[in-house]
Length: 146
Image 1 (cartoon, one colour):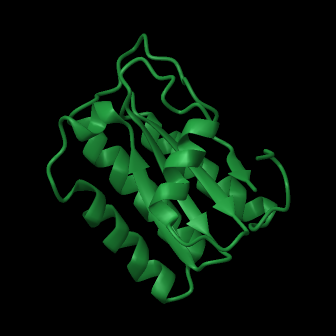
Image 2 (tube, one colour; image 1 turned 90 degrees about the vertical axis):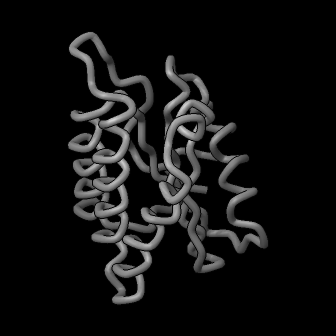
Image 3 (cartoon, one colour; image 1 turned 30 degrees about the vertical axis):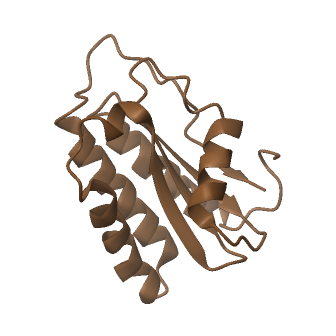
């Protein structure tokens, strides 16, 4: 995987997504990243787990990172969170976020869907992993591609 291979979003769209990530992370110690795959994938969630590991997203103190993975080649997406999150969140946590994103995607509004998903993740993680003054950003906020 290469950070910076063929972009899917314009510079302005990427900036809007990165801003949404940074805004969401101001309220929580959780870490959020977005990855875009151009390849067709049979199992989007399984590939998302692989990307999560490739990006070393498990390297957070509280194991509270989230990856939003868009497979544009397959027209699928998945949202995956680390074990620290899955130990504490309610059972509909991920489905709720996916439904918010799907509504925007169905209307052809990809950037808005991702931003809304990121916002929802940040709001919901805040109650489990509030931002502390000593917290530092543990993972890059940029969008990665393969």
